[in-house]
Length: 140
Image (cartoon, rainbow, N blue to C red; front, side, top):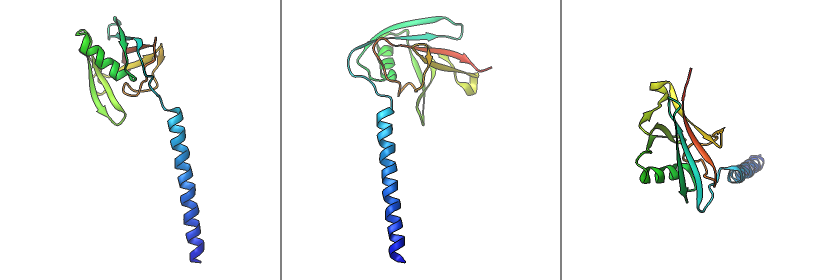
């Protein structure tokens, strides 16, 4: 009797190990990855009045937050800040304009080449020739 329960536990552990291995393999294959090397990108900011500001950025950054840090350090007309959370940095202020949902019923939406972004600023890979648009959006 004891051999059967030990055998079941071992089989269960093997199955669990296989499932975890499969999950890690899928995660590594499909997770967003940055590209190494020099890239030319555009960071656009559309404020609450619909006024657009564009910044041409040449960067080696693999992820958007790093490119934005470089831009903020080199161009005093661009700034951003936010709060760190479970999913990375939540951008709340760009160029001095606040968009905090709990306070303003608004947020900064990220678009990548005109499509709604699928990643946060810390996970968004940077690709050569891409345009990253931060748009002030109100919830209605």
